[in-house]
Amino acid sequence: MNIEFDNYKQKLNDIKPALDGLANSLNLEGLKNELERLHAMQEAPGFWDDPEKSQKIVMKIKQAENKIERYDKMVSSWEDLLTICEMAEEEDDDSMLPELKEGFEILSHDMETCRLETLLTGKYDKNNSIMSFQAGAGGTEAQDWCQMLYRMYTRWAERSGFTYKILDFQEGDEAGLKSASILVEGENAYGFLKGESGVHRLVRVSPFDSNARRQTSFSAIEVIPEIEDDSEDFEIRPDEYEMQVFRSSGAGGQHINKTSSAVRLIHKASGIVVSCQTERSQFQNKETCLRMLRSKLVEIREREHLATIADIKGVQQKIEWGSQIRNYVFMPYTLVKDTRTGCETSNVNAVMDGALDPFIESYLNCLASGNWVQK
Image (tube, rainbow, N blue to C red; front, side, top):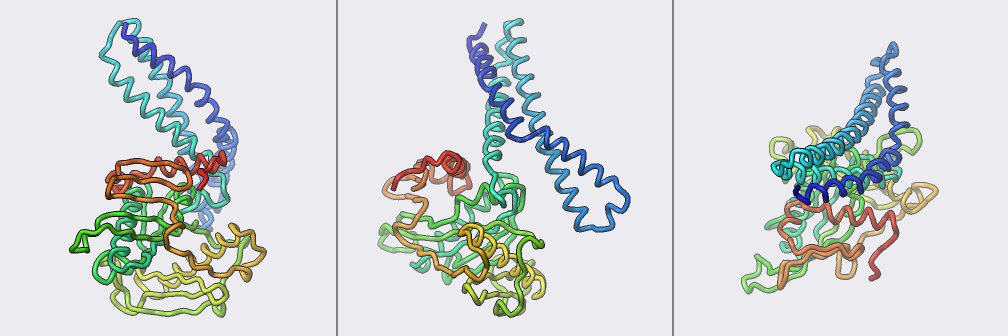
C-alpha cells in the first residue's frame, strides 16, 4: 500500500474540524432560513411590480444559494477524497493518487478562500469596488508605472471571477496613463481590494532612459466601495458641487463618445474631484459621477468616524518615498514586498500578471489578527 494514501487520509481527517467550523462561520443555518424567507417574498403576489426591489431580492437569493451550494460541494469533495483513500487501500491501486492529490489541492484552496471571505465583516465589504489610479511625479516613467498597475489589477479581476468597467481613463503624454478609474463588480470586490489602497513604489531600469539608469517611480491607488443610494445615508444637492464638461478621450474604443459628454464633479466643501467619460451621454456620465462622489464621501465619513459630510476635508495623499504600502523591485534583484504585512515574492512577472492573492490574503489575515509588520 502506498504510504501517500495514508498521509492524505490523515490530512483529510485533520482538515475536517476546519470544514465543520466553516459551517458556523458562514452561518449556514441562518442562510437557509433567510433563503426560505426570500423565496416566500419572491412567490408573493405583486413581487415584480417594483423591478428595482425585486432585482435586489433575486440577487440576495442567488448569493445565498451560491454560498450554500459551495459549502455542500466542499463537503461532498471531502467525502469523495476519503472514499478514494479507502478504495485505494482495499484494492491496492496507486493509479488513484494523481486524482487524490489534485482533489486535495482544490479542496484546500476552496476552504482557504471561503475562510478569508468569513473575515469580510465590514459594512461595505460585500459591495462592488471603485478603484482609482493616479500617477505620481516623474512624467512618462510614473505614467508608465501607473498603466502597469492598471493592467495588474484588471488581470487580477479577470482571474478572480470579477468583471470591471472603465469609468475614466486619462492617457499619459507620451506613454502610460495619468489617471484612471474602474468599477470592479462582484460579491466581496471591495472586501478583497480594500487593502490595496495606497502608494505603490517601483524600482527598475527605465525603458525611457537612453543611459539605462535605475529609476524609482510612484503611483497611488484609491479603493472605495460602491454604495447604493438609500435613505440611510444622504443625498448630494446640486449646490454642493461644481460640474465641468470636457471631451472624452483615452481607452474605451467604441464606448467613448467623442463629444463634450465627459463630466467632472468637484465637491465644494471637501475639494474632492471625480470624473467619468465612458458612458454614452453627458447625463449618464453625471449620474455615474454622483454615485462615485457619494460613495467616496460616505466611505471617508465612515472611516474617519465623522458626524456629517460637512466635516470632511479633502486631503491630497502624498505619492512619494516613505508612504508606500508595497515595493516592486525589478533591478538589481527581483522582489515584491508589502511593507505592512511582510508578504513577499521574487516572482515579479507573476505579480504583474495579476497574481495578487498572497498579498490580499496576508492583509486580511493581519487585519483579523492585528499582527502587522513594525516599520
